[in-house]
Length: 130
Image 1 (cartoon, rainbow, N blue to C red):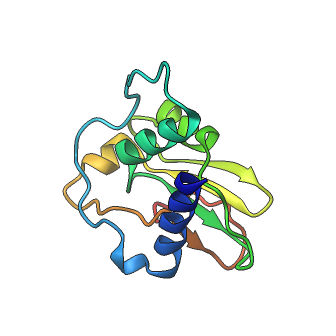
Image 2: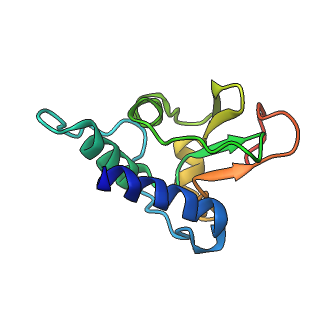
């Protein structure tokens, strides 16, 4: 329960204080990372996948009264679906989409870390790169 509370606190802090989010992202490979997770709990997998991909994905929420949970399923989508040159958007639920910038975007000199969660006004499905 303590770990879950810790993850929720991190998630909420990036929503409430996005300026404190990580601003420098490693330009290393973020497409599919073959990390060995056998024997780890789901909470530990979430922690490891989040640390690997931190700043390289974004949950976009259309309802300001809704707080998405960062789940193993979401981080698995991040880990397994990033494309080399095309950004992607995945619908997570009725209020949330997951934005994945391409590997090329992440490696570009101009790329800065994305806040984990942002609130949007209007539809959450978008093809823009922000």
